[in-house]
Image (cartoon, rainbow, N blue to C red; front, side, top):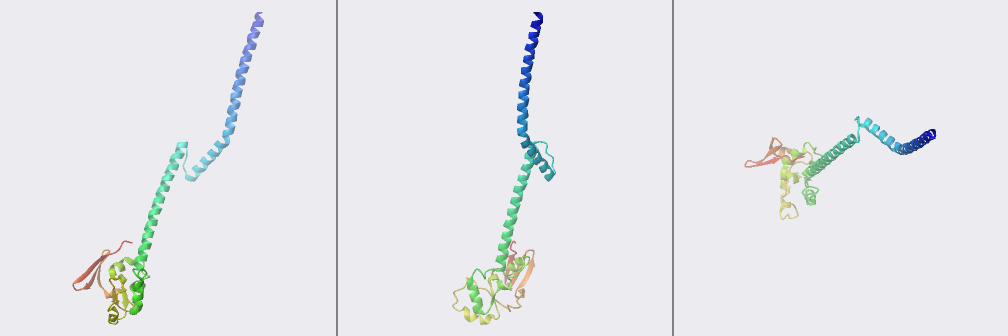
Amino acid sequence: EARIASLSDSVSNAREERMALRQEQEQLQSRIQSLMQRAPVWLAAQNSLNQLSEQCGEEFTSSQDVTEYLQQLLEREREAIVERDEVGARKNAVDEEIERLSQPGGSEDQRLNALAERFGGVLLSEIYDDVSLEDAPYFSALYGPSRHAIVVPDLSQVTEHLEGLTDCPEDLYLIEGDPQSFDDSVFSVDELEKAVVVKIADRQWRYSRFPEV
């Protein structure tokens, strides 16, 4: 009987051990199944991480490293966008200034074109329509309000046309000179630091600063 009792205990222990092993086996199988399902995702993520490390020359040891690096890239992108917009705005301003300086009134007031033709003259803006960006501020300051002028061969021939003239800008500037060989020698001028002093007459000077370009 003692032998039978001992064997019964052994059988009972074996059953319990088998049950425990079965449960452990089921747990292992479940974990294996879970890992197999996650493996493709993990491998893809690891591959992307390796590619990112190679491209940027950085070594990432955690997701936090990747997050911080991406935040740095985002900040750099924002700074680049701001700089691009600022450069674009400056370029637009320069383009507008070039347009204004190279065509300082002729294209905006068609009456000047008609008057130039009537007087047998040429718009001053047409004479300087190919002025460079470097020289534009100087000429803009040099001529000042008279940048809207009409260059005529002989002022005395224009006098008769001025009598009763109403269809014209409030101030009409006329300069005598040869449109084919016109230069700025009609003015007595002293050039200063980004400015000019134009000596219009003995008792009349004009100080004009270079416009910002």
